[in-house]
Image 1 (cartoon, one colour):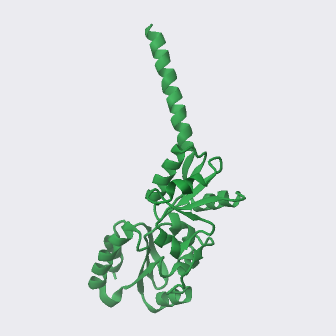
Image 2 (cartoon, rainbow, N blue to C red):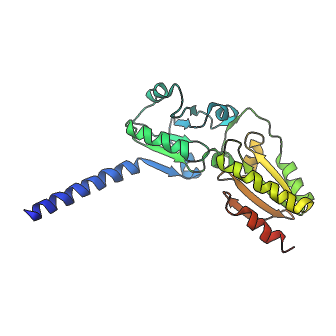
Image 3 (cartoon, rainbow, N blue to C red):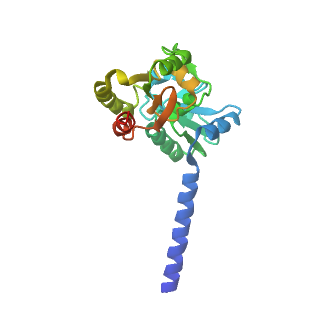
Length: 237
């Protein structure tokens, strides 16, 4: 009797494990090149920008639809999609994309892919995008700043990025501490998308790059301990 119960328990566990494993396989965070390749393999790719309408209006992947769980027309927008075809989702980070992906899986969608790094990775990787903005900063102007200043700290982000906002007071402290010794340049997606695309080095927001005489000293994908990292470099000079 005990053996039978044990056997049934193992069978149930294996079945549950298989079901859970299968569910997880249907949704995946993928890097830019894989995300792009999967989109290009589809005749009519279902791309969803899970950011807010204000963000979408400024820039987005061409052909993308714009909605998320908070959208008024959410159910109608979802019903217009084909559940048997892959869905490609992006936002700024993974939060809104993840929530949307989970709900779509519950609604029976067969494949859902989330872009690792979101719109930052797409534009920062030089992929084609729509924008109604003319960049305030151009690549030649960017390069001139690097030539004209010994130390340049570049902060690349978005005003809609929560983590990016935590960088601002740190930059002010560094500006006060180092004065003219450290040139600080802040580049936002909403102001200069093309220079972010031209750099082809941004994978996430925020991206922080410290240059010395035009050469990269360090590049940080995310905030990390920015103040300490800058101090270590500049305090030795």
